[in-house]
Length: 136
Image 1 (tube, rainbow, N blue to C red):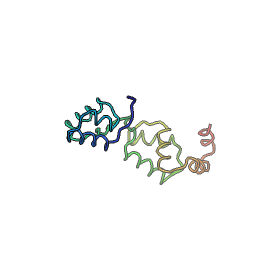
Image 2: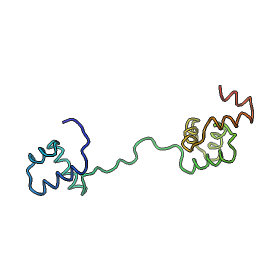
Image 3: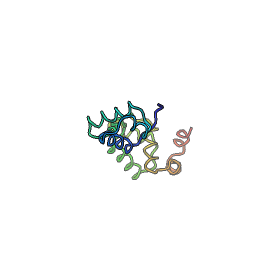
Image 4: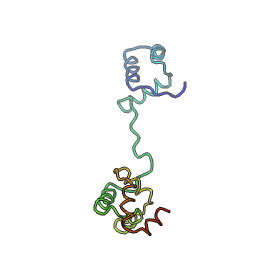
């Protein structure tokens, strides 16, 4: 059969039918999944006590910035929003010994609701030459 998502309730019902004494053919006719799926769910239930798979933990790339680092960045932006991203990058490198790219810092600010347009507008008033080189 083709891969399809089978609900946990249907898996539990099939196991309940199996315990009740129904034959595998009757169960497969009613549930419409394969014999190997029935046996896999039965084996998982005997091993773990449930038909649900364990959630996969630790998938994906680990985060570069921890919650404390993000809080530090947001507090810097709160107290002085006129800094450029490279200045935030230098502060993280100097005080927290973390090297991150500008895109990561930008994503942190976006997730926090800071608008880069608003920060750029305020930064233009700070130094027009640095702002012009930053935009290019």
